[in-house]
Image 1 (cartoon, one colour):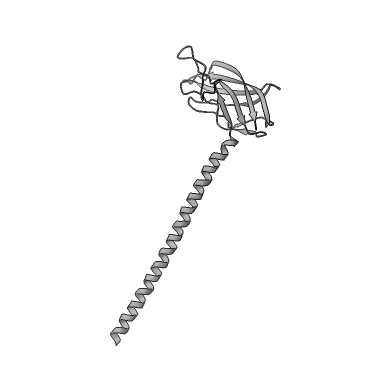
Image 2 (cartoon, helix red, strand yellow; image 1 turned 135 degrees about the horizontal axis):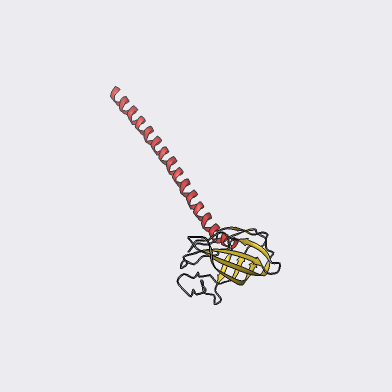
Length: 179
């Protein structure tokens, strides 16, 4: 009889260990499920922000024919290539704008951009040097642009990568669309 009490006691202890193990496994599984849900939710939020956040960024229409990218042609290998900008769409009344002004990858020089509002002659922004195949990042406009279409001038200056001396300038008219 003593032996069967010991066996019963061991069986009860083993059953309690198994229950505790299952409880810990369920708890760990719950933690894993929570972590996976948070990761999925974060990914969804990031994707939605990227999709809907695009409306907060500037969109540049480049080229007169709607071709995604067009450049003026260089006459020689050392002459800079300037993008042809037709319009820039930006959020109305914002001062922090990302205009996506790009320096073509074919260039061996730096470019800088200056945007001037035609109606007032006011310089809205002036970028620093933009490396080839890079774009001017977030720019601070001198003021927000009210909703509507506004004529503007862009002055693009090319600089030697070695000496930082100006090697070319191109000026063009375009439209700022604030919405």
